[in-house]
Amino acid sequence: MNVELINPFIKTSKDILKQMANISSDTGEIYIKDASFDTPNVMIMIGLTGEIQGQVILGMDKELAKKIASNMMCGMPVENLDIIAKSAISELGNMILGNTATLLSNQDVTIDITPPTLLVGEKISISTSLDKTITVPLNTEYGIIELDIIIKE
Image (tube, rainbow, N blue to C red):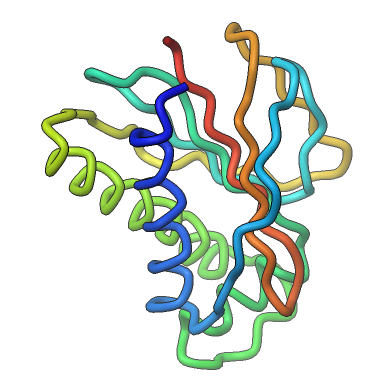
């Protein structure tokens, strides 16, 4: 996997999380997962098409998702992941991947993204047609966001 293609995903994830939710993050140790894996109980899935094909999944626990949604809505308390909070979380994913597309375009790599799909539940398992998933833990003071990058090579 070309690191030059992965870095824009990491940079924009950290930047947008800070700009939109006022949450700082540090990059944890990057590792590889098999094609099938369990995820945290809140996931934002966005497809990639164009010169890079695959998916990006942002996974987090419900408490972190509620904190992010609250911060994105100017501190409005979020007790449950209602439709407004889910919309905020989905938009976070959309902004991250939209900005990633811009950074990749600056490297002469053109991608399009699909609208985000938000999944909330217990014991969610993902199975992809690709062999490996690159996982980048983004450590925040409120928990970990798993940035899963699944790219067809």
